[in-house]
Length: 207
Image (cartoon, rainbow, N blue to C red):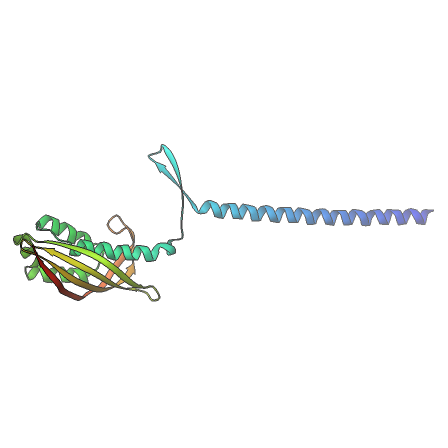
């Protein structure tokens, strides 16, 4: 009779140990799942930006991986530079303003072109001849396989004079380096090694 009692006690201990093991395993699974859910939630929250509009309204914006937008920003940076540097009007202050803003997007290589054209009296002829020069960027070829990024720009210049309109082909080449973003350089690039590969007349139409 005593032997049977011992067997019952041992069986009870085994059952208790088994129940404890099952309970601990369940606790570990619940704890692990909770940590995973918390980590996933934190990651999703880090992908969101909360913007306060003068402390009055709350706008929720989803952030994106900056590397995904880099090619788009590079093309826009180069396009903006060409529009500022090559679009001219017969007003000295307007020319100086555009050139100044363009030079903030580039290094000394672009300034050297500006200095050379200025010394040759190009801008003075624009002003005295009441000439308007517009620039339209057709396409930009980019190589993002190497750094600095190699960029080739294909554009057209429309030069409007009192007697005629001249269309010119413009092809330039440059390298893009990453730089600090600022109000004057929102895309965070600097143009280096700027070169004009081609700038020739295509056609001239009388007005």
